Image (tube, rainbow, N blue to C red; front, side):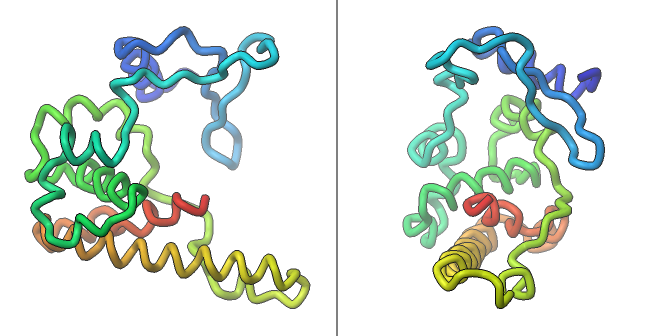
Length: 182
Protein backbone atom coordinates (compact mmCIF):
# COMPACT_ATOMS: atom_id res chain seq x y z
CA UNK A 1 0.00 0.00 0.00
CA UNK A 2 1.38 3.36 -0.94
CA UNK A 3 0.13 5.02 2.22
CA UNK A 4 2.81 6.88 4.24
CA UNK A 5 0.98 6.09 7.50
CA UNK A 6 1.12 2.35 6.80
CA UNK A 7 4.73 2.56 5.60
CA UNK A 8 5.67 4.28 8.88
CA UNK A 9 3.80 1.62 10.87
CA UNK A 10 5.69 -1.18 9.09
CA UNK A 11 9.02 0.61 9.56
CA UNK A 12 8.24 1.01 13.27
CA UNK A 13 7.27 -2.66 13.45
CA UNK A 14 10.61 -3.70 11.93
CA UNK A 15 12.61 -1.20 14.06
CA UNK A 16 11.17 -2.97 17.09
CA UNK A 17 12.29 -6.43 16.01
CA UNK A 18 9.52 -7.81 13.82
CA UNK A 19 10.65 -10.23 11.11
CA UNK A 20 9.91 -9.47 7.47
CA UNK A 21 6.18 -9.84 7.00
CA UNK A 22 4.47 -12.47 4.89
CA UNK A 23 1.47 -10.15 4.62
CA UNK A 24 0.91 -6.75 3.11
CA UNK A 25 -1.72 -4.16 3.90
CA UNK A 26 -3.81 -3.04 0.95
CA UNK A 27 -6.85 -0.90 0.47
CA UNK A 28 -10.15 -2.73 0.01
CA UNK A 29 -12.75 -0.71 -1.91
CA UNK A 30 -15.68 0.08 0.35
CA UNK A 31 -14.13 -1.69 3.34
CA UNK A 32 -10.97 0.20 4.33
CA UNK A 33 -7.83 -1.92 4.57
CA UNK A 34 -7.06 -5.62 4.63
CA UNK A 35 -4.07 -7.93 4.98
CA UNK A 36 -3.03 -10.17 2.09
CA UNK A 37 -0.34 -12.82 1.74
CA UNK A 38 2.61 -11.72 -0.39
CA UNK A 39 3.91 -15.26 -0.83
CA UNK A 40 2.89 -18.81 -0.02
CA UNK A 41 2.76 -19.50 3.70
CA UNK A 42 3.87 -22.91 4.86
CA UNK A 43 1.52 -24.84 7.17
CA UNK A 44 2.12 -24.20 10.89
CA UNK A 45 4.34 -21.17 10.19
CA UNK A 46 3.58 -17.91 12.00
CA UNK A 47 1.77 -15.33 9.92
CA UNK A 48 2.44 -12.38 12.22
CA UNK A 49 4.98 -12.16 15.01
CA UNK A 50 4.65 -9.34 17.50
CA UNK A 51 7.94 -8.12 18.97
CA UNK A 52 8.01 -8.55 22.74
CA UNK A 53 8.32 -4.81 23.43
CA UNK A 54 5.15 -4.17 21.39
CA UNK A 55 3.03 -6.62 23.39
CA UNK A 56 0.52 -4.69 25.43
CA UNK A 57 -0.84 -6.31 28.57
CA UNK A 58 -2.47 -5.01 31.73
CA UNK A 59 0.86 -5.37 33.58
CA UNK A 60 2.81 -3.52 30.86
CA UNK A 61 0.27 -0.69 30.69
CA UNK A 62 0.13 -0.19 34.45
CA UNK A 63 3.86 -0.53 35.12
CA UNK A 64 5.59 0.71 31.96
CA UNK A 65 3.32 2.72 29.69
CA UNK A 66 0.58 4.33 31.71
CA UNK A 67 1.00 4.06 35.47
CA UNK A 68 -1.29 7.10 35.81
CA UNK A 69 -4.19 4.67 35.46
CA UNK A 70 -3.39 3.45 38.96
CA UNK A 71 -4.24 6.94 40.26
CA UNK A 72 -7.92 6.31 39.57
CA UNK A 73 -9.49 4.40 42.47
CA UNK A 74 -11.74 2.65 39.94
CA UNK A 75 -8.88 1.37 37.75
CA UNK A 76 -8.13 -1.59 40.00
CA UNK A 77 -11.48 -3.09 39.02
CA UNK A 78 -10.94 -2.74 35.26
CA UNK A 79 -10.65 -5.93 33.25
CA UNK A 80 -7.52 -6.43 31.16
CA UNK A 81 -9.49 -5.43 28.08
CA UNK A 82 -10.69 -2.21 29.73
CA UNK A 83 -7.17 -1.26 30.84
CA UNK A 84 -5.99 -1.62 27.25
CA UNK A 85 -8.95 0.36 25.92
CA UNK A 86 -8.39 3.16 28.45
CA UNK A 87 -4.70 3.25 27.49
CA UNK A 88 -5.57 3.59 23.80
CA UNK A 89 -8.06 6.36 24.50
CA UNK A 90 -5.53 8.28 26.62
CA UNK A 91 -2.95 7.91 23.85
CA UNK A 92 -5.38 8.93 21.13
CA UNK A 93 -6.39 11.98 23.20
CA UNK A 94 -2.70 12.81 23.71
CA UNK A 95 -3.69 13.21 27.33
CA UNK A 96 -1.09 15.15 29.31
CA UNK A 97 -1.26 12.52 32.08
CA UNK A 98 0.72 10.18 29.77
CA UNK A 99 4.42 10.92 29.24
CA UNK A 100 5.33 12.50 25.87
CA UNK A 101 7.83 9.69 25.22
CA UNK A 102 4.99 7.15 25.43
CA UNK A 103 2.89 9.17 22.97
CA UNK A 104 5.88 9.39 20.64
CA UNK A 105 6.66 5.67 20.85
CA UNK A 106 3.11 4.57 19.99
CA UNK A 107 2.45 7.31 17.38
CA UNK A 108 3.04 5.10 14.29
CA UNK A 109 0.48 2.58 15.56
CA UNK A 110 -2.04 5.17 16.71
CA UNK A 111 -1.97 6.90 13.34
CA UNK A 112 -3.52 3.76 11.86
CA UNK A 113 -6.28 3.28 14.46
CA UNK A 114 -9.61 4.40 13.00
CA UNK A 115 -11.66 7.01 14.81
CA UNK A 116 -14.73 6.62 12.64
CA UNK A 117 -16.62 3.36 12.25
CA UNK A 118 -19.38 2.37 9.88
CA UNK A 119 -20.47 -0.68 11.85
CA UNK A 120 -23.42 -0.51 14.20
CA UNK A 121 -22.74 -0.40 17.92
CA UNK A 122 -25.25 -2.88 19.31
CA UNK A 123 -28.34 -1.42 17.79
CA UNK A 124 -31.16 -3.35 19.48
CA UNK A 125 -32.98 -3.63 16.13
CA UNK A 126 -30.07 -5.64 14.75
CA UNK A 127 -30.38 -8.52 17.20
CA UNK A 128 -34.13 -8.35 17.89
CA UNK A 129 -34.99 -10.36 14.82
CA UNK A 130 -37.43 -13.24 14.99
CA UNK A 131 -35.31 -15.40 12.70
CA UNK A 132 -32.34 -15.56 15.09
CA UNK A 133 -32.04 -18.72 17.17
CA UNK A 134 -32.62 -18.16 20.92
CA UNK A 135 -29.04 -19.18 21.76
CA UNK A 136 -27.69 -16.57 19.34
CA UNK A 137 -29.94 -13.90 20.85
CA UNK A 138 -28.74 -14.78 24.37
CA UNK A 139 -25.10 -14.57 23.28
CA UNK A 140 -25.62 -11.21 21.61
CA UNK A 141 -27.46 -9.88 24.66
CA UNK A 142 -24.52 -10.98 26.85
CA UNK A 143 -22.08 -9.20 24.53
CA UNK A 144 -24.20 -6.07 24.66
CA UNK A 145 -24.34 -6.10 28.47
CA UNK A 146 -20.59 -6.67 28.63
CA UNK A 147 -19.90 -3.82 26.19
CA UNK A 148 -22.12 -1.44 28.15
CA UNK A 149 -20.46 -2.47 31.43
CA UNK A 150 -17.02 -1.96 29.89
CA UNK A 151 -18.03 1.43 28.52
CA UNK A 152 -19.26 2.59 31.93
CA UNK A 153 -16.07 1.36 33.65
CA UNK A 154 -13.70 2.95 31.11
CA UNK A 155 -15.63 6.22 31.10
CA UNK A 156 -15.55 6.43 34.92
CA UNK A 157 -11.76 5.96 35.01
CA UNK A 158 -11.21 8.46 32.20
CA UNK A 159 -13.33 11.01 34.06
CA UNK A 160 -10.94 10.61 37.00
CA UNK A 161 -7.88 11.29 34.80
CA UNK A 162 -8.75 13.58 31.90
CA UNK A 163 -10.22 17.06 31.61
CA UNK A 164 -13.86 16.58 30.74
CA UNK A 165 -13.68 18.84 27.69
CA UNK A 166 -11.21 16.42 26.04
CA UNK A 167 -13.41 13.32 26.12
CA UNK A 168 -15.91 14.24 23.38
CA UNK A 169 -13.00 14.73 20.94
CA UNK A 170 -12.51 11.00 20.68
CA UNK A 171 -16.00 9.53 20.57
CA UNK A 172 -15.51 8.60 24.21
CA UNK A 173 -14.21 5.06 24.72
CA UNK A 174 -17.33 3.56 23.13
CA UNK A 175 -15.51 2.18 20.12
CA UNK A 176 -12.80 0.67 22.34
CA UNK A 177 -15.29 -1.23 24.44
CA UNK A 178 -16.89 -2.56 21.26
CA UNK A 179 -13.52 -4.08 20.21
CA UNK A 180 -14.01 -6.77 22.85
CA UNK A 181 -16.90 -8.19 20.85
CA UNK A 182 -15.57 -7.39 17.38
